[in-house]
Picture 1 (cartoon, rainbow, N blue to C red):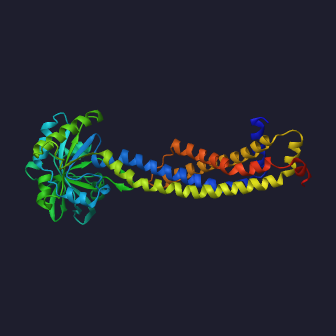
Picture 2 (cartoon, rainbow, N blue to C red; picture 1 turned 90 degrees about the vertical axis):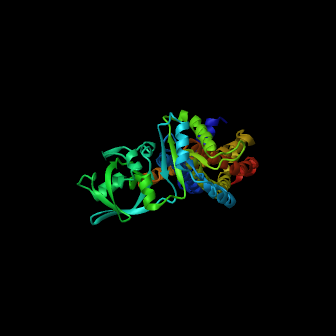
Length: 413
């Protein structure tokens, strides 16, 4: 029997029993759809964190010199305690890094954790929970801020501890919808600050605005809040190619500045946006660990259903099997026929599951901030899973059909 004939008969059987075939495949369809949809959402989130969140927080082509690593959640309590004893990053450290990397586009010092939040008030209006950053002038270059009104912070603002701020786009829109915000006096923590600039909007990430912040000179920030537990030096390079060399020079400058001997462990961390991405992926690994268990349960149930349906089909088609054997069909032909029917049925379930999962992922992406990216490997895995279930659970019914005695089979009604 030709392979094309085998497939033709298999599809004819599925077409003649549409409803039964659909309910037979329901377990595989749901399992595969779950696999494709959840994988698409997780992969989309990973890409989104890399392309938006990480670069928005640290900056594109940027690395940070910090007291503690970004991925602090992956280390032991003893390690956290040891890292907490590290000396703070200081202005002296920033100066040493700036000398070591003269080709950097910007070397900035910014206030670290804990990051304060406060209301920004103008007359009887306010914007609550505004994130406040104390920064030096180059920080605006590091974060790719573009001033749409007024001017950015200057070195003179930092040197003279001026009570000035540059606000995000959302703050200006909320407090001054029809008025130029530049030059207006706002109250922050009971003190008056002049708005000298408004930055262009960067949009939202997962529903969280990146434009509800206020930048003030680092020196004025410390007068208001004191020095933070951590301070960060951010270094922006012109492109990704220069990053490795610049990070090595920054490490050397920090070791010299802190008097570390050869072989002595660094008492600081150098991080890029990749660290945030890596930390995020450690969180998503838990989901990837759960997915196989959930999918396996559905697939096994679906496979058992397929096996039972194929056994019932063998019983229903006993007379047909007897006639085929009588006209010369070999046991191998009968076995191959029923095996391929099971494989075709399971693969069709995989295809329907992929389509359902794809549509579900796109619906989630359209209806929420969660992105979704269907990957080729999840589609291939789903189709292979469907075909594998057909083979695994179709062997027994196929062999049972092949072993039927032709005389007894022809007598069956």
